[in-house]
Length: 140
Image (cartoon, rainbow, N blue to C red; front, side, top):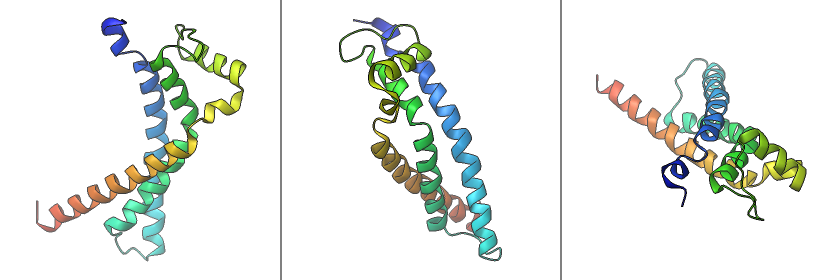
């Protein structure tokens, strides 16, 4: 029904969620790795250590950006539960959610999002560190 525009519905809100998420997660990840390395007297972290850092930092960033994810999801759905369209952008969507459902609705799906992102951070950053460590050890 929505054509090509419907395919990209919520794209701006997706970018508006991903940029803050990455801006929180990545510096925290580097700080966590640096701090943990210092606690180990400079001994390099293993991929398991990096995976744990990725999990915790990703979960924290996910929790903080959950309201942005709720707005993004609502925009992608295109309308609220009554069928009233979200057609004026993210700010209007945010305002309507708070007015109609209360501020707590912005945290809908918090536990699932934090779990999913924590698991993904563990797997991604652990695998990435294992692969890069392996390549460096091979001289690549």
